[in-house]
Structures are given as structure tokens and as C-alpha cells.
Image 1 (cartoon, one colour):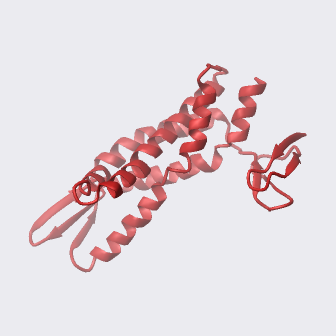
Image 2: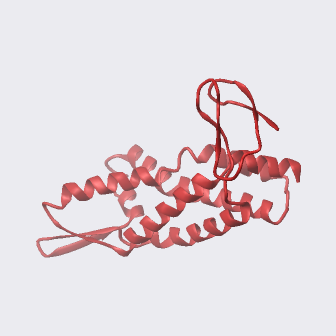
Amino acid sequence: MKTIICRHCDMVSHVPNIPSGYVVKCIRCDSVIYKKSWCNPSGLLAMCLTALILLVPAFYYPLISTHLLGITEGTNLLQGALMMIDNAPVVAFVVLFCAVIAPTLLISSIALSSACLAFNYHPSYLPKILKITYFIRHWSMLEVYMVSLMVAIFKLMNDVDLYFGVGFYFFIALLLLNLTIISNYNHHSYWEKYINE
């Protein structure tokens, strides 16, 4: 049995051997302290490579196009963030970081650590990659951007004609894949594989 310390209340617990897909909760504060994912590093590597391929069309192609007074304009995720630089540079940076930079770094770091563990390769920089992954996963907010995009669509749909671009569908696919990767990534098991193998 493993011994683990709860991040929330510092309770020391023994983690029993559990089947894949189950979680262990702290007996004091009821927060999840350990989960055993069904997905192994090679499976996560395949999903991460697919997500990295989807990043390019999701960020490059237009998400939505507006048609007003005979003029049609489309914008993609990067243009949307860069348009705000002059008026609200802080907001533009936060959107750019949380919707573009952080998800790209998160998927890349999980892909790199998954590749190392899948091929039983333990370079000296792997602990740093695992620490970066743990830190950056709190800043990857594709779902928050999606919510704000849907709010903008509902506000504009009565005033202008809206058309979903190709990038919107790639973005939906990227969002679903990103959520699958994050929900199946197990930080504790990656450290265990690194230490024990």
C-alpha cells in the first residue's frame, strides 16, 4: 500500500490498490487524493499528438463570421486576443496565455513525459517537465474561452448574421480531447513510474 499526504488538509493516508477509473478520497476533508486512470502513457501520448495536430486549425481558421450591411468578417482565436492589445493589453495577455499558450504547453509537456515513460526513457529533465505540467494545468482554460465565446454568440445573434467557421469545429474537437487528456492524466502515477522504473 502507498502512503500519500492530502494537499488540502495534510492528512496522511494509506492508498489501497484500486482498479482503474476509481478514486481515493481523504477521510478528513473528502477531497480526492489519488485516482487511478485507465489510460497509460502510450494512450495519452497518442491523444496528445492528435491534440497538437488539432491546435493549428483550431487557432488558425475562423471560429465565427459575422455578416452585417453586406460585409462579412471572420476572426480566429489569435486575432480575437490580439485585437484587444490596444484597448485592454492585460485582458489580451490573459486570453492569449490561458487560451493559447497554456493549453499548448500543457499538451506538449504531457506528450513529452508520456513519450519518455512509454519508451522507458528517463532523462534528467523529466522531473522538471512533470513539475511544469502540474503548474500549467491550472492555467489551461479552453473551456472558459468556449463559455465566453458562446456568450458572445448569444449576444450577437439578434443583431448580425452569424456563421460558424471551420475553426469552431476544430476548436470543439480540441476542447473535448483536451478535457479527456486532463481527466485521464495522473500526476501521482507518472511520478511513481519515473521513480520505480
